[in-house]
Amino acid sequence: MPILFPAIDLKDGACVRLKLGLMEEATVYNADPAAQARVFRTQGFTHLHVVDLNGAFEGRAVNAAAVEAIVATVGEDMKVQLGGGIRTLADVERWLGAGLARVILGTVAVRDPALVREAARRFPGQVAVGIDAKGGKVAVEGWAESSELSVEDMARRFEDAGVSAIIYTDIDRDGILAGINWDATIALANAVRIPVIASGGLASMADIERLAAPEAALLEGAISGRALYDGRIDPTEALARLRR
Image (cartoon, rainbow, N blue to C red; front, top):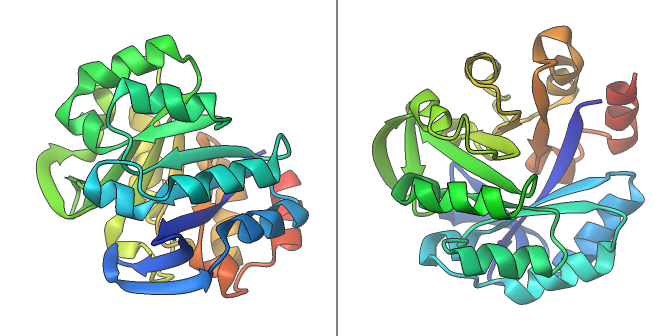
């Protein structure tokens, strides 16, 4: 069964959604992220995707209190993965020790691939790589800077590193309900042996149907943000469709 990850993006302690990755284009959906996590748990989700947006820009944990409250609220009922501002082995160890199921390394995966390899070796199955792309090139520092790395070149860096997944985000579609970039996402899943999670633009039940289709069978799942918050996707119907 493909996994549908509801997303909680944290900005200044609140649950928000950005448009095209722009911090000034933030819509606040819940001032209490732990309460939002509780809603997702009640709706039947088993996994949760959390991003510390401030942390991604500042390179350190900024919304730690909110993350800890989320983990305490959902307990063992949901597997929580976290990205944003995780830049050292100490950060990885700290968060996994705090009850997270998985950490996502993005900027540091570009700057220091050896650290990612060491983290994956120390914590098997609990380290993922976040690849955020704009115009086909990998972006870093909270999407504020572009690198010269292509998405596939970045992914192949970690082919034999033991990372558990790649979270691939098309920034040009993120938060605008344009639909996931299925062609690029499925091409990436076919190019590497690492499971791929689709992110950025999931808009409607049509995307859920596509996720459940045979051509997407290589994907671990997809992340949904604004479409869930705006009611464009019914959680019960989406989860039932994926189970079938």
